[in-house]
Amino acid sequence: MLYAEHFKAVWRTLQRLGVHPGSVDDATQEVFVTAWRKWHDFEGRSTARTWLLGIAIRVASDTRRKQRPTEEVSPELQMSGPGPETMAASNEVGRRVEQLLAKLEPERREVLLLVDLEGYSVPEVASATGINLNTLYTRLRSARQQFEELVKRESEELR
Amino acid sequence: MKPLSKEASAALSALQAIDPTTADEARVRRNLERALGVVVPAASVAVATTAASAHAATGASLSSGMGVLGLGAKAVAFVMAVGVGAAVTVSTVTAVKTAPQAVAAQEIEITIDAPTVPPERSRGATAELEIAPVSPAPAPPIAPPESSREVTAEPEVEIATAAVQPRLRAPPPPPNPRVEFTSAPAPAAAPEKDVLPPPPSPPSEPEVSEAAYELEVEANFPTCDVKTEMKAALSARRLLNADRAEESLFLLGAYQRHCPSGRWSNEAWVVRMAGLCHLDRNAEVIGLLQWFSTEYPGRRTAVVSELGRFCSDEVLKHGEPSAE
Image (cartoon, rainbow over all chains, first blue to last red; front, side):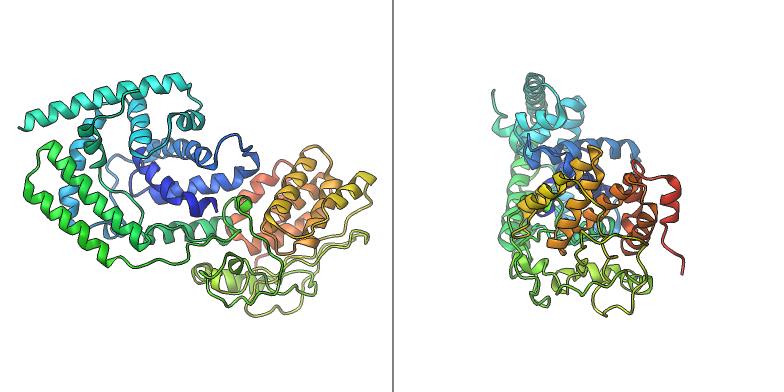
């Protein structure tokens, strides 16, 4: 049930957290294996979704440390995505946005992506990471401000 | 707190779509099943309507993002077309119903009353079908390793179609709580062809305290529903952690007797081994571990690691599957 309900969210979240597409299979598997092993420790104080997010954040952190920066996407993964033209167009925009996001501090970027893109609430992220709620709100506010300025500047430069 | 502006939000959502495809999902699920030794129900990743909206959304968000970031209108139009076109080609994915053998299956409420549900029925029909246990076996003591290997030699086929095939595991014969266990499980006769061989006969329990009998009453499983199974699982682990291994084993015996094809049955064997180690019933652990390792080779490392808290290295070493 946990897998059936949360596979997609875990998969997306891992990639949002910087896991390379070539490693996302293994990382997703690791999240659910860990959940399976630790299920008896799950006390139900948070939702399963939040609990999984906590595991995913830790797995993503470990995976990022291990993965090589120039890791290539496997042919299988390349085949499973959109067509080349779509990829090219989306890559163009995506690359620019990624470049903007890369200018944010990692902690700020993380909370911005989890909240504003993946739809987690700040309390959920706080529960999953153990980070103080106020700290996260501050990070999110700063991240939004910074990202908005970057987007504004980028679009002005392109005009 | 001030939300993200429209522009920034559009830019953010223009990040490359990273939803998994059904192929991604199947690949991960296969690996997960290998690692855990259980059948994992398919996750819904690309039902037609969802996929259509996802693709359309991709197109829309890309166009917004392109607008924000100044890309040309031609590119936008193309992406929109691809987005809509892609929706047409997506096929419907069935089998979004889940089986209770999923990871953390304790969350769901499914009752299994009939252990003789025909296993040939299709995956998508009802949740019960996915876990349909075969008819209770007449208590063969242990699995011959040959047939285990025969099945595990083709894990992809077995796992990929597990939901529409007979239940992989024959239920363990209920242990008799009053019969003394005196020796390690003996090899069994020839197994059935289309099901994995049954696990070793759960050993009977030693004399137990009155408290344990109360547990038996508590664990008088009227139905093997998720709630009851969850309760049994937690109680058995708690008892073990509280150095009450005999009572834990007694409870496990009750569980395995009442719910021979329960969702927690595989884990129950691990807890049983830990309890047996705790009581220095090493011969039984070795027999069980050999069977378990043959049956679930992918899980052996994790199980041995878990048992490391309770069992000696020597026992774990002897519990390696016999090389045949």
